[in-house]
Length: 135
Image (cartoon, rainbow, N blue to C red; front, side, top):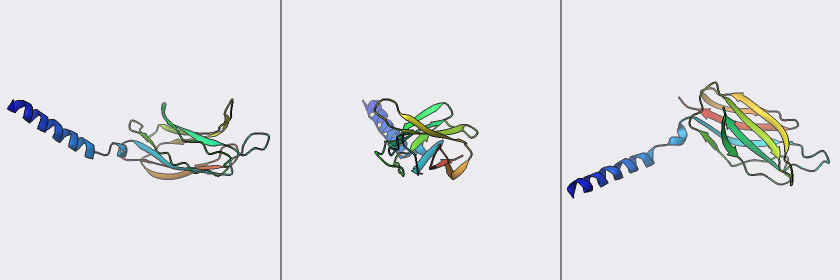
């Protein structure tokens, strides 16, 4: 019985230590996404933009979309624990529609160690984002 109590205490200690680790600090973190002057559809409607994010071949997810907003700010952050320097960070900007979403442009950046604030130019407008890769 004492062995089981000891194992439970050890397991609890390991779980407590693991909960204190910051797994998000490893790999690439993408954050601070916002855009200016995005275009909507050819009819002149304002865009309902959102962003899809990849690091290498790993899809990290997508932001929420903002209805009728050419100057959106997204709160989403993306973590890629296995992304390494020299892989490509890709952000695709899309306009949400009822049937088929319109691709507004793509940003590509080769990942490097450090923290960076970047911008790129989709078909119209400017996309801003930050990423960091810690060693």
